[in-house]
Image 1 (cartoon, rainbow, N blue to C red):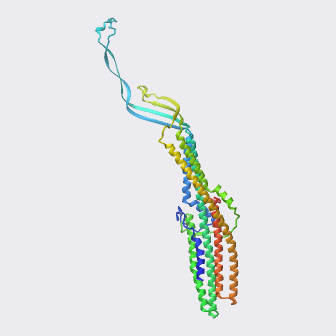
Image 2 (image 1 turned 30 degrees about the vertical axis):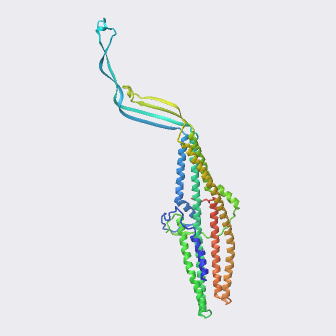
Image 3 (image 1 turned 90 degrees about the vertical axis):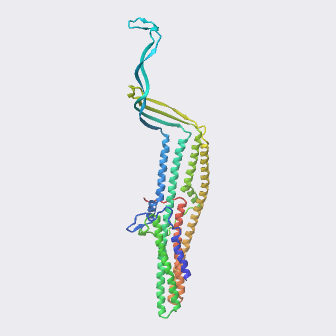
Length: 482
């Protein structure tokens, strides 16, 4: 009898702990400690799980960052308009100075004060004005400039750069959706674990109460001399064997609540009241080929790889543009003052320029070739990952669908087992009351009933979990109110 109850204890306790370690990135106990009892339904748990998950917040930040890069890439389609200015103090500005007259030799005829010609041999020097130019003037130079630049041909760099940034944003959004699907499944897994643990507590507590009543009944019969001391000891041993299982399932219930609070990123000491029951609600399920097709269309992992493959193709086109020339247009208008000779150094001068620019790469050390090879390697890698991921998703969908079908069959079978075990226990009790069977038959009937009830609860739990797993496998997520 002890071995029977030990096996039942394993059935009761195991589901509470399977897969219940906090997920990576979930910082248990981060939330504010509650002073009131927190009522958690499945819908509320999903809302809190999606709202409090720090990994989701980080993924949302990555989406915003990629959106910023997309805006930057889009800016390359438009002309760049810049304004600049400068103020320079210099002591090397040009200037003219009037100095001492210079006496120059001359041999051409000149006249005296009366206008009479003077023979050339009488004149040896001729005075000239003393002008000289120097670069020693100190002053300010002012410059202001308004310039516009517009790329006309870049070999596809601008277009493909923008498309690559846009694809990165969409890929980050698919990563966010994948994490949301994972979070929803983790919350459902933890929530159903609490419901199962609580139902198991009810089963074991009821079994203990029933066995305790039976023990008192055998005690009365023993005092009346109608049963032996051995019979009483056997019932007492059976009752004692239930107590450890009762402790175990109660502890399992508390652990399952802690797990749920950890998944929701709430303080682990938050008093919580879990609303809901572990109930079977059959739902139609599509055929496996249809489910695989739905997963191929909706799984964010596949969509993300498709987007990154297209992004790698865009990067390859950007690298190919390294072999092509670039053409651009420019125009500017500028104002200058201070560089002319005095007194014009105080006058503002303005003018404009416009033209085309052209550049052609002749040799870049094989940089463009290396970038093209890198982009092609990324495409090949993504293509292989796509094939592996698709096969893995198909296997995941098949396993979830088969598990769901098996759980549904187990529910039908264990439901009949519970009904049969209840009838068997009632008959055993009635027959024991009139002395047609001994107490061992009653104990066996009680063990069978408890096992049947535990098996039924496990089947319902596995069915609900398989439903959640199948929804995740095909990329389907229910709407959650904010």
